[in-house]
Image (cartoon, rainbow, N blue to C red; front, top):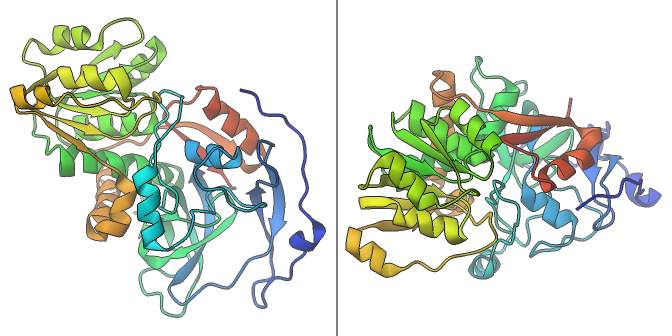
Length: 387
């Protein structure tokens, strides 16, 4: 699926809107001016920060597959043109978000690229330095290095977000490593600890293991919880990367039965925990690979198919099947959401985890970055550099 490389311009009246007094410097942003067309880089005018808001000078931001779907008009919510990817998340009305949640089905067809977001709910992660704070902000100050999640303007040189969605970066963590943490490691920590309740020495099967979240799960399971990890991915190259990042064993599930391969590695007893991001047959084989009282955590459906759970398997082995959508904790249980972020920073500061960046693209190469993800070339986290 190729992306045509051409230049589209915004209407002059929109681009030349007056900046608010006291912050006149415009900043660059990636803009979608026409669906299914390349993004353009334009100068946009800043707006004032609210009392609880913080303006951040963005250094890095994550590229998520859902943003590509939005720019192609293939997402559930369709923002009015022009827009900045990551900017629009649907109405703020919570009832509407719940309705969207009930009908949301991920149709991503690219294995090892796992969706982590719903319309109207946060997913965009970034790192940078505080430029300005609102009158009632008490958590950060100008000059602080921060990571955060935002509904607004993250694919731009500046973004504005609520102070609650920012966390200070310890001195020994780079801005690039910090940008990898929010979605991938926030998800991994909640999947492994909060949901699966993994114990030291247990065996974990991780599917889509070479993706950003898969590598984060391997990192946390191996280096924090001292678990044994079997990494499952769709190519030998991806399996090799997963092994390099800490997995003890790997399985290429494009070459045969995942269940049979796992049985050879883990024995007839099976694995204690499975973390699945693929869905379909891979999910079912992961489920059948579980040991007595095993737990499987569903993080997404990157294979494009949602399997029905054979409940007899849950009964026969006393298995627990559960889901995890990290972003929704921000609205349902912010304490858990915030703890996942602070824990990721703590683990990284202590040298327990080692975030992996698969590729970094400059803002001017945003279309190349999208193509890189769409063509399944990405492993690990793909970042956009704004500096």
